[in-house]
Image (cartoon, rainbow, N blue to C red; front, side):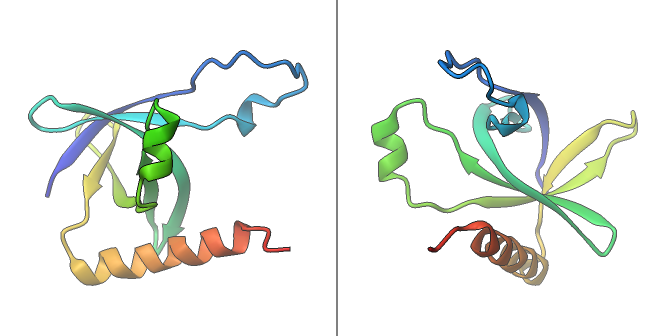
Length: 116
């Protein structure tokens, strides 16, 4: 099981609209793996299932062209609390659990889409 430390942040945006709610801005997580490699992801959604919290993340690309070329896949990580009481995101090694939670996120995303 791989564990990731993470730093949550929001990008500063030059907005013409002063009425923009900061909660509407994307949340980015910089994951730091066991080898110290940092990768930035966008938090897509969170959900709780059977008392366990999960996060769906997608790679974040600074270059819009890279974002357009991305395959649209996301990663699902489980939230666990370390010995210091800090949240950690950990990989899900059980294929059945990963697929089940991934399907829940897909259903959630489908419900959030405005297909009209």
